[in-house]
Image 1 (tube, rainbow, N blue to C red):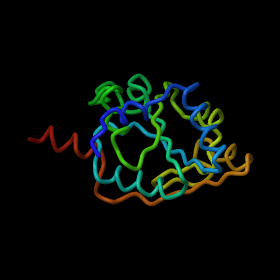
Image 2 (cartoon, one colour):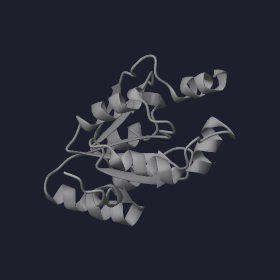
Image 3 (cartoon, one colour):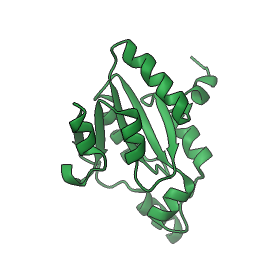
Image 4 (cartoon, rainbow, N blue to C red):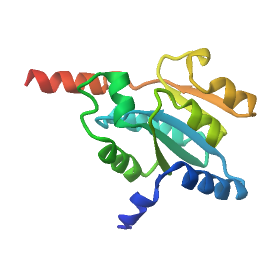
Length: 163
């Protein structure tokens, strides 16, 4: 199936995403949410997104805007701008919706979309995950998936600099 228009249909602003979520929920479907900068997509990202997608019927990815990424990662990031990162993320089969957010954390977005499952990868504790207490208070759950060792955007950038 070669339908490139599907990619752009998976990119939402908040009102559009809330509308789509209500449609999925009317069908009794569950929604998982994860977030990140996803600057240079690599195998570790694919593993994390695949794990997140298994947690619910639909996966929503919150993507840090360029300004948010710079504040979190430094002035030389992102390598790929938010339009490129959004398009690549929406092109992934396991991702059902992508939304940009400009804040340093996705808390406002999490509170707006109220996911059934909040998924993070890495060495976080429940107390460290932004939005965890809000999702749990609303009856949802939080899943911490292990990261795939040996893959990071920072290490890719360091390798490129050494070339």
